[in-house]
Image (cartoon, rainbow, N blue to C red; front, side):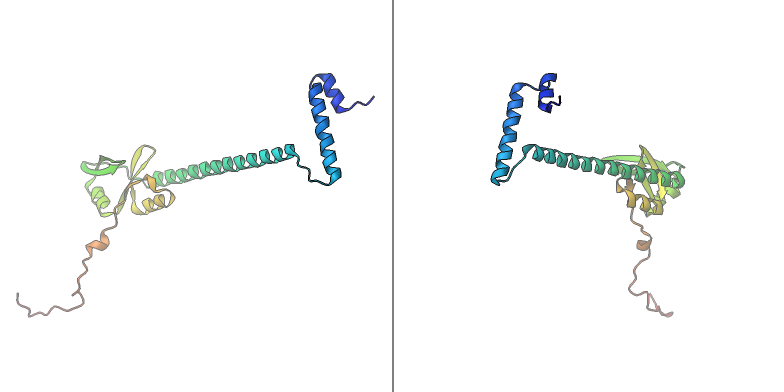
Length: 178
């Protein structure tokens, strides 16, 4: 009473006579090649392997994209935390102009904050569509994570204020007449 799978598929209507004959010929051809010692190439196995390799590559790319998105979110969370703790909120009546994406913008600051921003002791950060004034150390930490959020981070000019005098080591005589 046991019937072959081929007979069962034919009776169920899942295959027709033509497909059964084609499958039988392919099986006979494969057996004949094996008997003669020739290498048998199974096209369906190759297609399955190629499909598995393509799926694996696609999965790797997808996993890489997900990992990159996680890293981006983690960095943004760290920057948000830094800004929440170190942002200077006071605004004043002194104007400071800066470049943001090719257009000149301005922000009103306290005079001492503006001077510190010009000196390089403070930096201006743009995050979540808001401008934040932060100390130089916080700006450095943000820049380590992602520099695109830093708008203004002037070089610290405190070293420039110390004049490099080549004669600083020489003593000036008291009796020097001008």
